[in-house]
Length: 205
Image 1 (cartoon, helix red, strand yellow):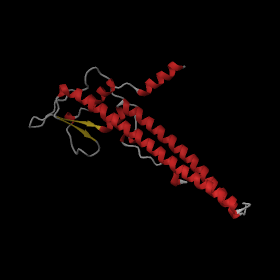
Image 2 (image 1 turned 90 degrees about the horizontal axis):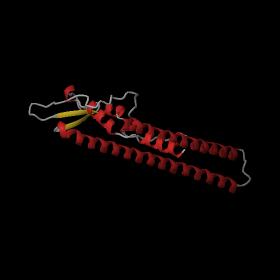
Image 3 (image 1 turned 60 degrees about the horizontal axis):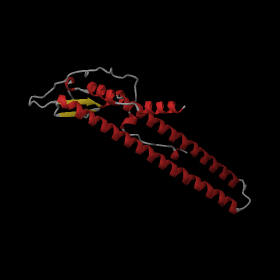
Image 4 (image 1 turned 90 degrees about the vertical axis):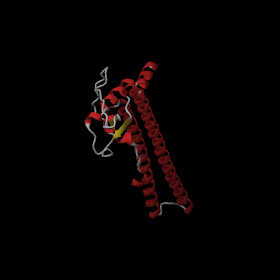
């Protein structure tokens, strides 16, 4: 039953595809960008798409969120199919006078209605859980980026750092691009949560 299929909307990170390319972790920033406009204001920008596909935090957690989404969808599909089967079976028995009494038919119909209600509640709960996980991820991403840029900008002293995604900035000269610097720096600071969890499981064996 299509109406019961899981249709979770994953926020920006879950929508970003993860590629296998990662920036080189140089000891020094990838490039020294000293871009300023005519008034002397220093401006820079970060490509959001590149950040999503090359920052290890984004790559790992987009996989985590995708796995959760797939598990939820599979669970709902399975229970939806079971409900569909029960409804078809009930209708066939009703058409063929397969119930010994009216009470028996009403009892089975009520059971199907409870099964349907349970499925709807499960769908709402799983969607809410995934939305909460996505919100936590986005908060963590924003927090890590802001902390990094605060430290990064102590030396760079940019007056304005923009995010560039799609056409939100129609044109920007490449000299304003600090994406590689930011990705390299973030990846140096990031400690893999998935790796830490795997190490803990290995220690318990």
